[in-house]
Image (cartoon, rainbow, N blue to C red):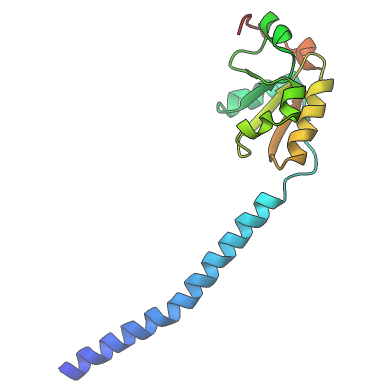
Length: 147
């Protein structure tokens, strides 16, 4: 009886010892995959027209709407829920306030500054960056005023 119990314990220990290297290899593979994914940000942002941008906002409620216009322009009217970081401040380091894993819809008045900001975010390893084509000049929904 004792010999049978010892054989079972030995078989269990052997199985565990054989599994440990496999689990370590899996863990290393996962670490390598996610580390590579983090290093391989896309090379460019994606342009969305107003209809695509509205669908994006409806589908992904946690989308960060990043308005890169001046504070004065922002106060005159902006998409509800957007945050204002002017382009020059974004490029001067305020991009560090943002979470690289968030999904961003970048907007300005005409689409030019937001395109610059979008590429800047991509160049700084942000993964999910969408630029509003034509900017707020083509945004069909009401804007809110104030801060």
